[in-house]
Image (spheres, one colour):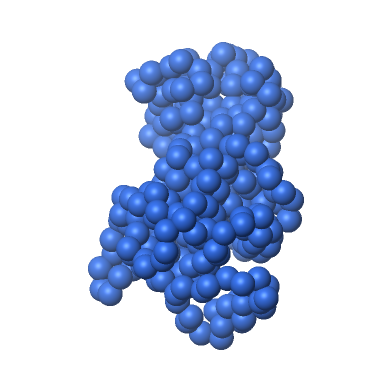
Length: 173
Length: 130
């Protein structure tokens, strides 16, 4: 089962994703994609770590190339979050890349190796601001990734202040 | 009249082709079309851009939208949801958001079907498919 969890920032996506993940009976792996950059990042990481405490997740730090991450077969994966992964793959070293094709194929190959895949992503396209070309490219790439994952995902859930709204499939919990 | 809305890059124009049986050639863009074209076009995308262009000429986008509703009442309008950020510091930007919001409300009220698209997935907020 593949579930994409989306929504604006701080709307309860992680909490919902973890609740959903807790229903999976097998071994649980957490793929953390955030590059810890500065104090705020560490704060978020600390808060998310606390939320995951005692849940028996194996945490794997993976900031790019999630398609080739080494994990056993038939496990469950919670990947958090696509917004970071997209930025990591896009702004690699000095180049600006268009990572949508690569990330979608990475996610597809990952999904074929595991029993459960929950992906937390981010909605960043509704504030109407014309940002710099690089930022607009980032928004369009992340949106493209979300659209293409939604095509093969079983469930797409939008979180609104902690309330899961089904966009595709069902709200399971 | 039909309205398709949602954030940028969510697959709104694609949704218009799929749901309402129009062709790519039927779609004009508010970014670069003639203002008069809007009154006869089958489908107008980036209507929020048209609002911005109308403002640049000193025209009232709300009045223009009301005229559009009278004269081209079977068209499909596609416009971005743009109101989910911080209210901008600049007055012109604030007026722009207000105009887009008001025009969107008028169009939605006139429309028999209103669709919101997220991640390429269409949801009817109003009308048949709901």
